[in-house]
Length: 199
Image (cartoon, rainbow, N blue to C red; front, side):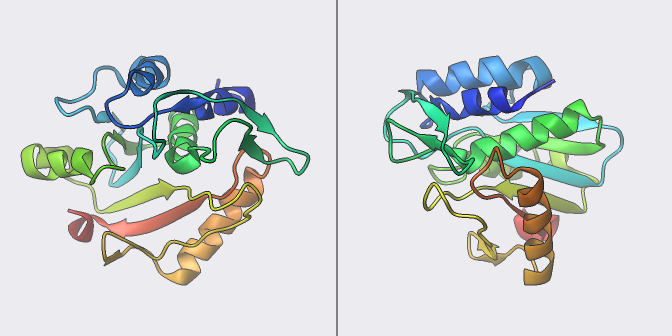
């Protein structure tokens, strides 16, 4: 079972698209659970007969790949002592999804590749393997944005110019998840979007 220590270790990987650190992260944390990725590098797992998809991505916005030192500061927040980017987007999303899979929660789980460089992983599914999301009526995208090491909550009302959530839904969900993860995440946003607008 994944622990807070595993989450901190996950954050230590700086994973720009195509880097050795990204491959190592995927081999260590995703491949044992999801198996082999699709031809583009997306990890996909179906539990049960789901109508809801849970999505995140395994690349980060770091300039260079490698490892960074991550610690818990005096306020109980994860922070890095060596970089100005923690990489919680989307490491927290991956961590939450792995915990959901451990718990056996029914769903279609997709961890996209190349999100930070233009949503190439999700675009691949839309253009080449749309059958992956057949039967799915809604998607929950777990997204984390770190503006500072002490931010407590962020609401993201849209992605790629499309409305993804009502303010009421996102605020309530963000508050619930943030309260449960105050010791392991700087901010967590879960947004609802219907699959037709996503695809």
